[in-house]
Image 1 (tube, rainbow, N blue to C red):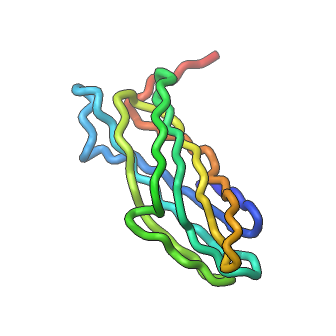
Image 2 (spheres, rainbow, N blue to C red):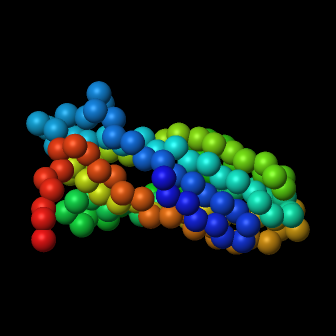
Image 3 (tube, helix red, strand yellow):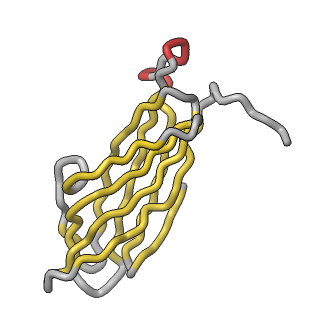
Length: 130
């Protein structure tokens, strides 16, 4: 698991490889990732936008931006959390993801919350010893 806290908003990510949806012979590898967003602060916030940077094993970067997560823009009061699962395909057996969420307070102030970088590893990745 990977965790990072920004301004009392804790984001925890747990990636896992989906063998049944992947086809290594076709260079198609699929991961899911569970995200938990916890408001450990004293103010209510709403998740407005997401930004992902997905880099495959060859160093190719894909950026994804959009409103909310999984079709929602959850409101988190102090002490509340929101969990969701999403996924991403790659054409390489490994990669890395990192991102951020744009949060908004009740007073209309926006701030970015970091999503920790997390590794996308499959059992098909060759291990290289240095």
